[in-house]
Length: 263
Ligand code: BTN
Image (cartoon, rainbow, N blue to C red; front, side, top):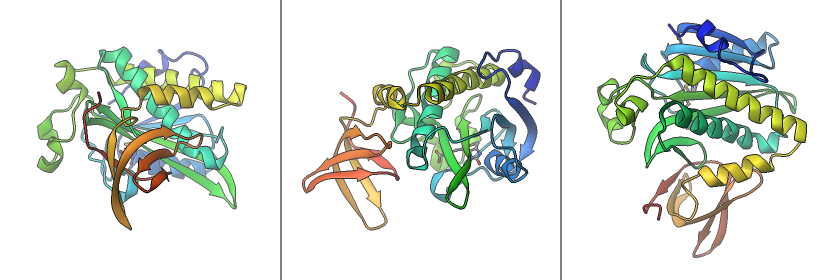
């Protein structure tokens, strides 16, 4: 089981005082985190589990969560306004990119909005959920899954082509505790920065340098239709700006398909 002590020993301020709760198996760490919020915990608690029986992805998809991956959900107070919630997910994405690079020197990027990818294969994903009371944001739950010590056979056949794992990329097993500690140090550092400087601009500019969707042809699949265009920019709310033949379209949520290689 992931050892909380091994993680805590490696935490630096401002992550040093977070509370970690580790489990062997849960339904979903985001759901466990939600239950903590319902009990009144609104900040600085991290739920980690060795595996999940009902891991959740974006848009009600499942998240296959066998032992060997890192599955964590951070409860944090909203440090940005509700309209900028996507930027909080992006903070976690950027933190994952830095943590994975420090651990294993793999060149990872973010596919808009928050798929953690090696080339175009997914090595991790992020699910951010707001807990509100009336129109007040009470807490934000930032969930992350990273494929660490896993191999293609650990996944259903239809997923094998589109995913990768840190083990596959490096040929070596990694310490889940080292990765978790690197991630928490990175993310709480960014949260502190946004909180003290009251600006999200550094997040946005870092995001643009790590996002491999920009300057690419993309296909956007929405319930009301499919269109193609070129991904031009990210706005200050985290929306993707796509240039199409009919003009610019802003996507605040959804997924895109990359159509060409990054040049
Ligand atoms: C996605 O790319 O669709 C997001 C996947 C997020 C998965 C993580 S695993 C830990 C946390 N608990 C969940 O049920 N989901 C997130």
